[in-house]
Amino acid sequence: MYVRTVDYHTAGEPFRIVLDGAPVIPGDSVAERRAIAIGAGGSATAPRPGALDDVRRLLGREPRGHAGMYGGFLVPPDDDEAHLGVLFWHKDGYSTACGHGTIALGAWAVDSGLVAAPADGVARVRIDVPSGRVTALVHRAGGRTTGVTFRNVPSRVSAPKLAVATSRGTVEVAVAHAGACYASVSAAALGLTVDTARLAELTAAGREIRRALEGSEAVAHPSDPRLSGVYGVVLYDELPWDGEGLSQRNVTVFADGQIDRSPCGSGTSARLAVLAAEGRLAPGEELRHESVIGTVFHGRVLPGGDPLGSGVVTEVTGTAHRTGEHGFVLEEGDGLGAGFLL
Image (cartoon, rainbow, N blue to C red):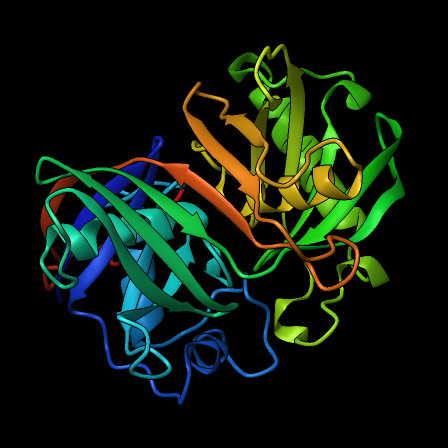
């Protein structure tokens, strides 16, 4: 097996773009291809047999990857209005949305010449993902990509204050759908702070809250059951801020205990919708969203919409940088096969 990739990081979170070596995935849309990839009616996090999953495991496991690896399979878009489609993957399966991946894909589409871009100005890259069509606005100066703004599908709050019992006591959780479903909770309410020294405890708390919300009406998507179920838990701290808007630090625990090194793009969209619903963030005001490693996204809600009804359109700006180009090989006779996770 031979697989060719180009790798980026967005605010510290890896994104491995598969260029060659993945099998053709059948389906008439990106959402349908994801459903086929995970198995009709199956769990998005359950391991699945087949050639596509062989490639996902090969790239996401040691010795070629690691438990925090993230990436995407390039697929055809739903129609010719978009530049590309993508199936997002991680160590446990296939996700419905990925903001940091969209930022990386926007940078790659321009860097590779797939989408023409001015030397100075903004290039618009339209990308079909399982949750819908998103846009990467690629900012350019002096012939270089200086940043990317991720414009998400509408984000909607389904439960502003939901009491959830945990081993650390009952806490209030806000649930929002932002391409994927996220539950937000104050780290302080759990007796924690968002710090790498508390990462094991934060991860355990995130997994516990995710399990507690299984089957809750709040995590059911109103129109597409394929988007239901908590994907990530955003644990946040308030930070001092003297600008217009808010500053928070977060760690997002997604899938089965995976940690987002970035401030989480889709998770930032969810936080923006929650803050708008709470009346804490007006359209156009900035959320400075810091990750557990100190990298930053800047987010805002665009005017119009209703965070508790039709949803709001959000924009999240960050940077992505290429880290390598790889040709991965699985040699015949390699007893580790697609690899392992620790």
